[in-house]
Image (tube, rainbow, N blue to C red; front, side, top):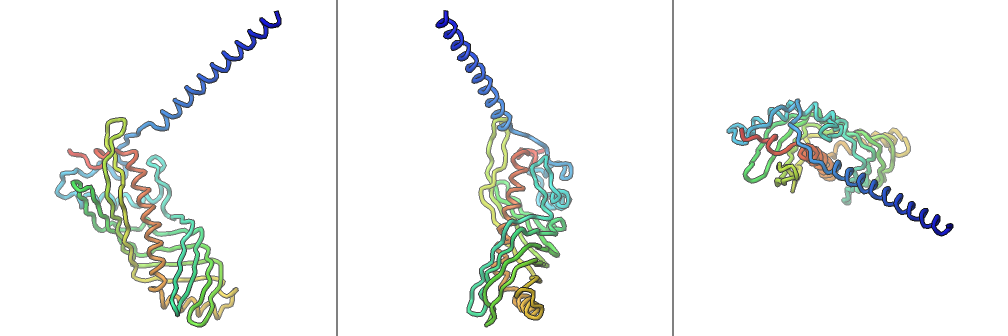
Length: 271
C-alpha cells in the first residue's frame, strides 16, 4: 500500500512538472513571438507622407520635410524609438594633443551637447538606385557642457585642473553620409539597414572655458584659457573627430530606430 501511494505521488509529481514545463515553453514562445513582431508604421505626423521615389524634386522634398521635423525629433519620440537629442548626452570625449609646444590630455565626462534643435537642413542628395544618401547641415552654435580633467604641458608651463567645462563652437557645418541595403522581413515588407556611414565636421570658431585650472589660481587659469582660445584650431584637430564620431553614431541610431519600424515604401512611396 505504501509503495502504491509512493508511486502515485511520484506520478502526480511528474505530471505537475510536465504541466509547468508546457506552460513555461508556451510563455517563452509567446514572449519570443511578441519581441520579434515586425512593426509597420507610417512616418510620424510631423514628417507626413514620404517623398515620392520618382519625384524630380526629391532632394528638395527631403530637405523641406526634414527641416520641419528637426525640432520635434530632437525632443525624442518613444513611438519611433528615438531618444531625446537636445541636450545630447555623451558619456566621454578624450583629446590627446601632443607636440613639442603643446601636450594636452583632456578628458570630458558626462557631456551635454546643446543646440541641435536649431540645426538647419541645407541640402540633400538622395540616390535611391545606388542606395546612397548625403544630408548637409549648418548650425550657428553648439554648446558642450561637462566635467573635465586635464594634464600636460603648454610651452614651458605644466597644465593641470579639473572642474566644469564650457566649449562653444560656432558656424558648424556637417554632413551625414550613408549607404543602405533593403532587408525583407517576415511581414513581406522591405526595411532600410544602414551599411556604412560617416560625418565630415567643420567649425568656424571655438571658445573654451575651463574652471578651476591650477587648483583655482585665477591669474594662471585666465592666461591658460586665453592661450587655449588663441590656439583653438590645434585643439579642434582632436575635438572635431571625437564630436563627429559621437554625432555620427547618434544620427545612425536615430535613422536605424525609425527604419526598423517604418517600411521603405512608406519613406519613399512609388505613388
